[in-house]
Length: 601
Image (tube, rainbow, N blue to C red; front, side):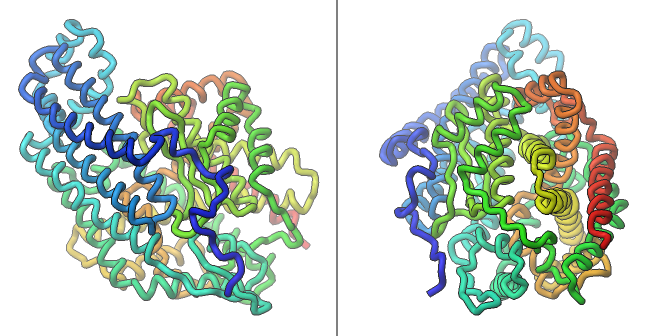
C-alpha cells in the first residue's frame, strides 16, 4: 500500500473546508428553490412582446431577467461546488446535471432579449433613457448588444441555439468526467523504491522533487495513462473544436477566435501581438533552458526536469497557516481595506484547502453574487501552494470589491481581466519575499521561482494559445484533429519554445490531452496578457504608491461595467500594444542575467 492515501471527503477536517451552507443550508432547500425558479423562468415569456415597447418595459424585462439569473447563479454554483468536493458522488452529479438543465431552460426563456433589442436603433435607445432614467444602468450592456447586431440571429435561431447548450457542452462534460472521476494513475516509486500515490494534485509536487527517479516515474506514469486514452480524448477535443467553429459560422464570424474575442471587444491584434512578442523573446527562454541544464549538471535535460529545483538544499515547507500570514504581510502595501477583506476570506469559510479523493484538481475562485466568494485549493505545503493562495484570493477579492459596488448585470469579470488581480497578488508576494528573505540560497531559489512563473505563465500559456489557434485553423480547413495530428503540432511547439538544449520526450507530445482549459476555447492566452498587465500594475503600486493603489482598487470595483481594454487603461496599462509583454520580458531578462551571474562558478 502506498503512503499518503487520499482521505475520503467525509474524513476532511471541517476547519479547512468551505462553508457551502452559506449558499444553501441544506440540499432540500436547494431542491425547493430549484422548483421555484423552474416556474419563475417561464414568466420571462410575458416580456417577449412588450420588451421594446418603451423604456420602462425594457427596464422591467432586463431587471426580471437579472433576478432570474442571479437566483440561477446561486443554484448553479452550489451544485457544482458540491460536485467538485467529490466528483464520484452520484448525488451531486445529479444536482449539477439538474443545474445545467435549468441553466439551459433559463437561457432559452430569455433568448429573445438580444434579438429584440438588436432591432432598435441607438436613437430609440436614447429616447428610452430619457423616458426611464433607471435604464441608464444597462447602458454598457445595451451598447454591447447593438455593437454585435450583425452576429445576433433571429429570435427563433437564438432560441434554438440556447436549447442545445447542453449538447454543445457535452465535450467538456465528458472530458471532465474522464479526467476527474474515471482516470486512475498507477503508483510510482522514488529512488529508494518507496511507493507514492500519483494524482492530479500531487503530480507537480513530484516534478518539483530533487529526486530525479521520482520525477521521471511521475512523468512517465501520468502520460502513459493519457496515452491509453489518446483516441478517446482526441475525439472529445475534436468535438469541442467543431462546436466552436459551428457557433462562429452560425453567428457569421470569420473564425472561432474572432468570436471569442469579440464578446469583450478585444481586437484580434492583441492575440497575435502576444504570440509575436513572446516568439521574439524565445532566445531568452532558450538561454534559461541552457542554464537549467548546466545547474542541474545533467548530460541530457528532459521535460521532467523543467520543474526540478535549481537551488539545492532548500527545505522550504510552508504550512497553510504560515502561507496565510505571509500573503497578508506581502499584500499590506495595498492598505487596510484590502487586507481586511483578505482576512475576512481567511476566517469566513471561503476556502476549501486540502485534497481528498474525488476532489477537483487544481484551484479556482468562484461564488454567487449577493454572498461571499469561494476558493478551491489542493494545498500541499510548498512555495507554489503559498503562491496559489495569493493567486486565488486575488480572484476572490476582485469579486468581493466588484460585488460591493456593481449591480448583478456587471458583477462578473470578462476573462481578459480575470487573471490580472490574481497575478498582481502573486507579483506583490514575490517582490515582498525578494526584499525580506535574507538567506542567500532562498534568494536564489526565489529568483528562479519568479523565472518559473514567467516560463509557466507568459511562455507556456502563449504556447497553449498558439496550439489552440493552430488546432482550430486545422479543423476549419478540413484537417482531421486526430491524436496523432494534435501530438505532432504539440511536439513542434515544444521544440520551438524550449530549443536545442532539452530532449523533447515523446511523452510530452500527449500533454495537450490533459489541459482542461482547452475546452473553454481561447481562454489561456489571457493568463499571459493578464500576467503582463499584473507585472506592470504591481510595479506601479510599489513605485508610485497611493495613486496607483487607488486606480487599482477602482479597477477591482468596476466588474464588467466597461470593456476590459478600457478597464486596464484606466488602471494604467495599455494592452493594445506589445509594450506590456515586452516590459515583462525585460524583467525576465533581468532575472536571467542575475541568475547567470550568481551561478557563474
